[in-house]
Amino acid sequence: MIPDIGLMVGLYIITRMIVLVVDKGQKSVSRLFAAGTILVALICIVDLMSKSGPTPHL
Image: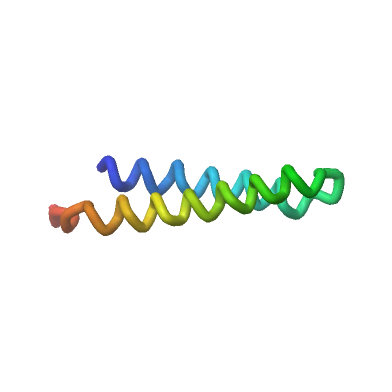
């Protein structure tokens, strides 16, 4: 359950940061930080998924 929530939050963060990166009105510093946030979110998702155990089958 917790890895599922972490995955959803991580994907939401990535989605919001992609919107910032492609927005033409944003400054380059904002785009740089958004790209960094995407990278950190991806690393955290991979780390969370690698540490979680197998999902029990119902």
